[in-house]
Each structure stands twice: as C-alpha cells, then as structure tokens.
Amino acid sequence: MDSQAKLNLTYTVRPAANRAKTSGGMPGLLMLHGRGADEADLMGLAGALDPRLTIVSARAPFRLGPGFAWYGMGQVCQPAKDTLHTSLGELREFIGGMVSAYSIDPQKLYAMGFSQGAVMAAGLALTEPGQMRGVVMHSGYTPTDSGLAIQPGGLAGKPFFVAHGVYDEVIPVTFGRKSKDYLLSMGADLTYSEYLIGHTISEESLYDLSEWLTSQLDRAT
Image (tube, rainbow, N blue to C red; front, side, top):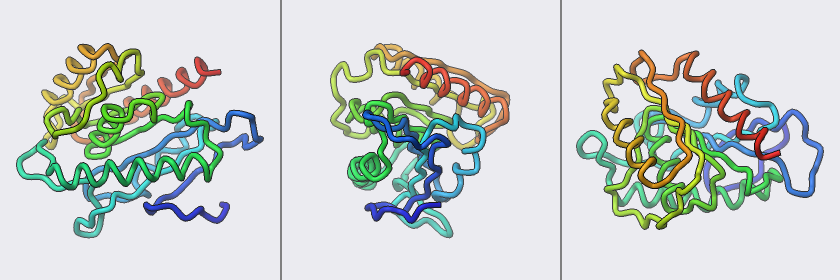
C-alpha cells in the first residue's frame, strides 16, 4: 500500500483496482464506523464493494474505551450537539484533503456509515449536500433535531440507501422508519430496506448495499 497522505483524521485506504488517472478523478467511498470501533472496522467489508471505488475509512476523533466515537450521548439517539458539530467540522476538512490526496472526483464521492457513522453520513448530507453524491446509512438515523444548519432543498434527488435491522436493540427500527419518512419528505431518491437482524450488517444487507453502490457508479458513468 502507498504511504498515506497526512490528513486531520487517522484513516486507512483501499485504492481502486484501476488506478489509471482520468480527467475527473476516481469515484470514492468514505466509510464511517460505529461507536466504540475504529477505522479498521468497516474496511473489512471492502472486498465486497465495487473495485472501482477508492475507499477511505476514517477514525472518529473522540476516544471511547479501546475504540472511538463521533459524538457523546445523553439518552439513546440524542447526540451531544457540541461533539456532533465538532466531528462534522473535522469530516468536512478531512473530505477536502482526502479527495485531493487520492485523486477522487468530488462529484463521485459516496459516504457509508454504520450506527453513529450513519448519523454522521446523514449529517454531512443534510448540511453539505454538495459534498456527497450519495449516502449509505446502515442502522442509524437522520440527526434532524441536533441544531444542524440543514440546507433547504439539498436532499432533493439525492440517492440514499437506508438499511435497518427489525430487531435492532441499540437504535430501534422506529428510528430507521422515521428517517425513511423524513428523507422521502425532502425529496431524496431513497432505497429503504429492513432486515431480520439486530444492530449489525448481515450478508444480505451488505450484498444489497454493494449492488446499490455499483448501480450508482454505473449511472454516473
């Protein structure tokens, strides 16, 4: 693997299989892990994802036990606003450096998050919709009550793949359903699926989100 560029967040990267330079750059995928994990966690799924993607998995900035978190919490599904906003700022800076360092086309950048990472991916799309071509949210929710500066009309036509486990004991499926309703009300191009799983990514949900990402890349080309 190439030596890594120095960016503001710790991360790991899987280069695209075909790294020939193009005028517009390569399609990219930003992976955002869940609470208590790190940048290596979701990268284990990279082999199941489209080889055309340059995949960058970022580490959250706040230490939590042996892992890391994107934000603190009071009650379930109520992010602490200060840490949430801090992490969103860090991610915006990270994306700017990432697309330059790895020749990623900023018009072909997708975000994929699990749990807290899904909340962060949604937060980026809500506040900076131009930074994301599309979003995969697995076992998360849209942080619409967190004081974010949501861009009016920014989600209209924006592709989203939202997956949630019916038996999720950490973030109940009702939050996934509320996110579905919100995204539809905002005009997002939504694919929503529920699975007979808990707070995890299953082979079925991984297959479905992988197929969705591939279809998005095919459309883009």
